[in-house]
Length: 293
Image (cartoon, rainbow, N blue to C red; front, top):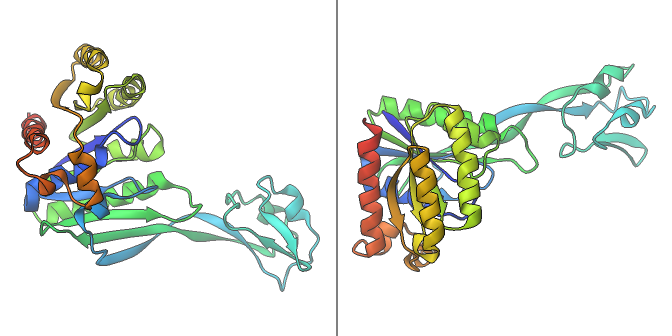
């Protein structure tokens, strides 16, 4: 089993559309994995049915036992997150604002405050439209520890792939360079960097490549909408050459991208004979060649 992680320095580069297209192309040889848990959307393109769900618990939140509470207000005084308020004569904790630091529970003399593990999200295993499966998740509103949730999603996907003798796990990582991205990259066999031919595209590509380099991971790159600014595209290619990163695809601007999204389809489904679809298929072949080297 080989894991291919698709990332970008920012959102909107086409990362998810490409991840879904690769998964659709490979069919039952691949398992799709969406690690963009803060704003998951690959399930829309692959028609995930959310068949199996499991709760994800992480972090703690304070709960005040009203029977023991003397309403002294010390907990509200020491809370640096403004999470405790007097409501109708009783102090209560706002679970969205609570950071689970335990300070209030330590200073409470009647021991009226308990710290309980909170549900931080949901993990799903779905059947998708190309007769294979997908592991994905949704972080709860205001919840933290998205990096831990990503790690659990990846773990579930790898176990399922190994048990099913599936050749590839195709992971749609989070955009940016934060904790969920770091977790997405963990254990990857190949990283696919997706960028676009803009100044910010180059800047964000450099940021995410610096992160990939820190983990000593092999990477390739796809330049999306390269023809909108060919001079910038050339600068990106020059940078990639310096970093010894192979360009496995240069995709032109094509409204097929947005038309396919509007129909909740991958580009391959929407028009398999289009120039863009053929280029994506060629990119996927290059990626498979790279991941086995």
